[in-house]
Image 1 (cartoon, chains in turn orange, green):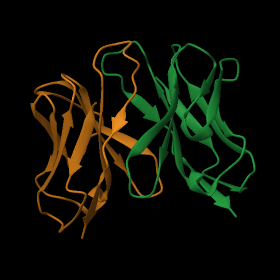
Image 2 (image 1 turned 135 degrees about the vertical axis):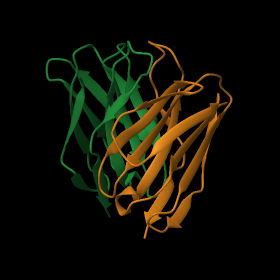
Image 3 (image 1 turned 90 degrees about the horizontal axis):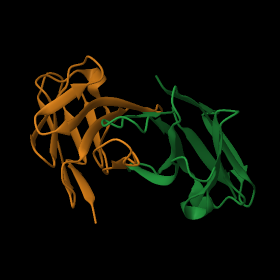
Length: 115
Length: 115
């Protein structure tokens, strides 16, 4: 069966420090991968998605970047964090290809507090 | 373009009462529709999904939803609420014909179950 893991689960970072959140998927090949952010009391905002190694699409202009160095690895980064980057970050995946059912499966989430 | 509106950011019911969480969508093509549940500090878990088969979809934990094209709705129901149903619920819409399979999420509805 497929599983998705992301880490760290929680982190507190000072303003201006770098960020690296990592996500890996097991049990599937060539998944579509996603990074979402969930601000407190709000819905999910899609930040980045990837349909293959090295292919990253950004949904919103921001202080963050994403990379996919391996088929099942997705990394969310920042060189200098802002207070507004605080939130709950969710990695997700789905089977690639159109008409595949489009069900998105989520990781456990990472709480980021920028102080 | 696609969008989701969840009517009511907070819903409170008594234990044993009917649960009704409302979701209306907008999509230029016949959509896939999803309901997810999120417990505190966790990722999202799929409750059920509609992918153009039966309009009444049954999910986990006794939940079901009915796709009504004429009303562009996909409301979530459960006949009898349980204390363990207290969580946040998200409705999502997706275009089945795209490889990226991006889903658009509503802002969520927090369900409170009173004893």
